[in-house]
Structures are given as structure tokens and as C-alpha cells.
Length: 111
Image 1 (cartoon, rainbow, N blue to C red):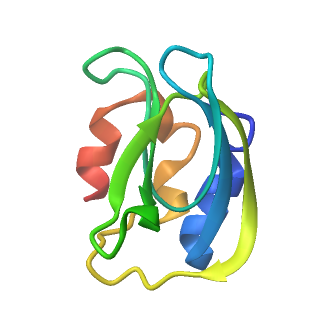
Image 2 (cartoon, rainbow, N blue to C red; image 1 turned 30 degrees about the vertical axis):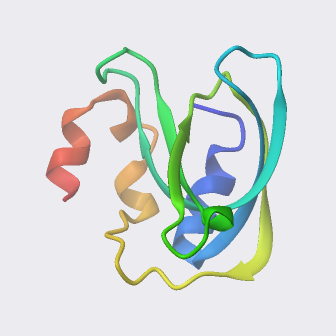
């Protein structure tokens, strides 16, 4: 879990975008984007690493979903820019507690 995890969850609950500063997969190039936070998948997935998912609207109306691991994320900061979550199924923050983040099965039960 990233140190800004609570910021991510609060942004989902408040329907606010976040500024994410992250490194690419090779860890060499840094990027900063304003994105919609979508969901978090804890450790235990396919590659045994947690992932944060975001929707980047820079790519036009269709947008682009991308993910970053906690190690790739430098920081996440809230913005005051709202987004309309229609079309997305959002999981509430209380369903992503630290206890739940230890078990990949917990996301299935939350849906």
C-alpha cells in the first residue's frame, strides 16, 4: 500500500481527481497526470503486487485506464476538480480497509 493510500480512497469517495506523480515501468521516466482514481487491487493478484488504477482523460473522450504499483507512485495529491462517476462501479472506502487489503477475496465479496 502506498503512503498516499488514504488520499486515493478519499478522492474516490469525494468524486475528486488526483494529481499522480509516478515512474514508468523501467523506473527512469517520471510523469505527472491529473486522473480519476478508480480502484485498488491489493497484493495477491496475478503478479503478487498491489496496483492502483486510474482513468486518464488526456486521451480524449474515451480516456485511458492505466495502473501503477505503490513502488512506481511518487505521490498522489487531491484536487478540487470533480468527476462524474457514471459508468463506473466504485467501491466505497470502508470496503477497502487495511484489513481487506490483505486478502484478494475481499474485493469479490465487496462487489
